[in-house]
Image 1 (cartoon, chains in turn cyan, purple):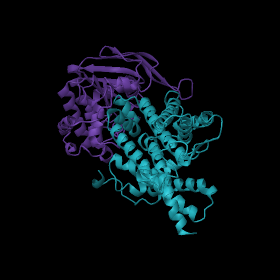
Image 2: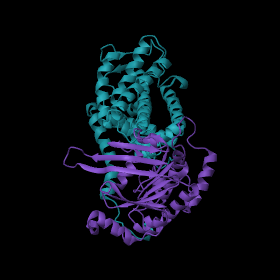
Image 3: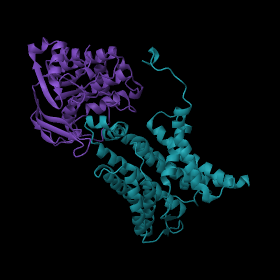
Image 4: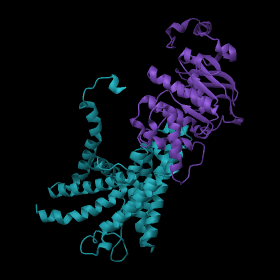
Length: 309
Length: 264
C-alpha cells in the first residue's frame, strides 16, 4: 500500500466523479424535483455513450455527437414518460421497462457489438483519461468537465425559474394542487423525464470519451451511483447551500466524494468485484438515515400546547 | 354561471364496494350566488365538487360553467374556470415552494405557461397587497417556504390563491373543518370578505349548520347522492338550526343522531 499510488489515482477519480456528477444532476431532476425514482438512467447511461462513439467513428464532430447523445437520452425519457402518464404504469416499472428495452437498442446502436472502442489519438475527443496530467489546463479533462457543469447548472437554474420550470417543481411538490392551478401534470413529468435523461446521456457521451470506449454494461447500477451522489451531496454540503444552483453543485461534489472514497477503499485492498455491493450498501444506509432518525431517535415531544399551535 | 344536469357517479362499479355516490344531481347557480351545502357523511357533497372540478369523469350528465360544457375536459383544463380550497390544508399549496412562488403559480391559472420568468417584481407588490387582506403577517414572509406555515395560514393562503385570478366559480370543500375554532372563524371571515369584494360565485360545503345559515344567500341539503332541500333569499335568512334538523330527520328517518354533523 503505497500512498503515492493513491495520490496518483486521485485526479482520475476526480475527473470520473465530475463526469458522474453531471449524471447525478440528471438524477436530481427526477428524484428530488419530480419526486420520481427513474430507473431509465441505467439504460441511458449507455445509450448516450453508444450514440456519441458511433457518431464520432462515422466522422461527426464532438459537439454534434454530444448533441445527438443528449437527444437520444431525451427520447428514452419520453418513452418512460409515456409509459408512466399515458399508460398509467407506475414510474419505477416504467423506467425498468425502458431500461430493459434500451439494452437491445444500445446493442443495435453499437452495430450489434457489446463494446466499441474509440482512440483519443485518432479522434479529437474533448475528454480522456490520458488528458489529466501533463497537459495544458484548457485541455485538462477536469477543467473541461467543470465548464460543462457550470453551463448545465446555469441553464437549469434559469429553466427552473421560468413558468414551465416552476410548474414542473409544483408537480413534484404537490400534483393535486398543480392540477387545481391548471398545470398539466402529465406534461410536466414528461418534460422532467426527458430533460433528466438527456443530461444523463450527455454525461454518458463524455464518459465514453473519457474511458475510450462505449460498453453495453456501462450504465449498470448508474441510478445507485446517481442517488449516492445526490444523497452524499445533500448530507455533506446541504447545510451550506440554500439556493437551487448551490444544491446542484452539491450534487456534483457528492459524486466526486463518492469516487474519491471508492478510490480509497480500492487502495485499502477491496476487491473491485465487490464495489457494486459496497455502493448498494452505502446508498441503502444513507437512504435509511432520515427514516431511522425520525423513528428511533426523535425526541419525545408533547402533543398540543400553545407553543405548537 | 353553473349548470349541473343529471350528474351520476358510481364508484367501484361491479364490485362488492360498489357505491352510487351521485344519483342525478341537478343544480343551477346564478352569477353571484354563494351556496352553502350541508348533509351527512356520504351524502355526495364532496363528490359533487369533485365532479365539477373534474377529478374523475362522471358517468352521466352535463356540467356547464359560464356557458362552456366542461363535462369532458380534464381537471387541469377546467382549472381555468375554478378556484378550489380543500379540506386538508396540505392539499392546496406546494410545501417545498415559497409563498410568492405559490401565488405566482396560482396567478397563471388558465394561462399558457412559457419560458418567461416564473415571477416578476410587479407581481410581488401585488401579492403583498393581497396578503394583507388575510391579516396574518404573511406579507412580510413572501420568500418563506409554505411548509413552514401553520395549517390555518396554509388554508388562508390557498383561499387567496384560489381567488387571485378571479374564478368563475369558487369551490370550498369544508375548508375550515381541519382548523381550530378561532382560526376557522378567521378563515371564514376572510372567505366572506373575498367573495363579497370580488362578487364571486361560490359553493361552500360545511358541517356546521350555524355557518351554513349565517353565510351565503342560498342553502342546499344533500342526502344519499341527491339534493333534498334547496332554500334561498328571505326564507334562508330566517332558517334556524332546528328547522334543518327536522328537515334532515324527515329525509333520513332519524339516523341523524349517529352522524358527525355539528349541532353547535
